[in-house]
Length: 172
Ligand code: ATP
Ligand code: MG
Image (cartoon, rainbow, N blue to C red; front, side, top):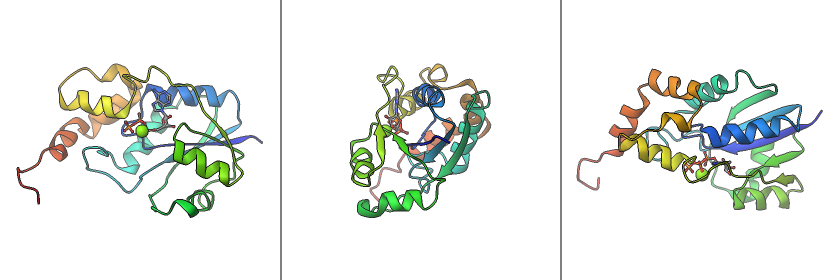
């Protein structure tokens, strides 16, 4: 049984993530999708809850031919024990797929094989760019799977993002 791990914040889950997952799915039997910074929500850079991100992933991957587990992973802010923390709450896996330099370093030090998936049209397919477009009332739906746009509509996500990104003009 080949099992792999892939982590992101998925704020929101977009077609870059989807493209990586479809290619990993061809190489493995099961995929663990770690939803990073799971505790963060209702912030300009992290507007969606872990549960909402689970919904996005579940609906977006409905037709993909791989068993997957989408598991929320809270931040612990202790890099030396982060890999043990992750592996203590996931099914066992042999390979981690990521392009994040810190995550690569931590997994490799722990003796876990790391593969770096190719970037899919990164200029537009980034969470930061999609949130910017939502705030600016620009087109964003074509950058996410249709099912993710439906989830964001269901939870009125753009309205929330706009509200949590606003300040009252004071620094407190
Ligand atoms: P943000 O801008 O909010 O940080 P992001 O687009 O970087 O969002 P994350 O949720 O941070 O996405 O997920 C990070 C993971 O997704 C990393 O492993 C990263 O390499 C991968 N990833 C992000 N965008 C793409 C893309 N366009 N193509 C392939 N992989 C991507
Ligand atoms: Mg990122």
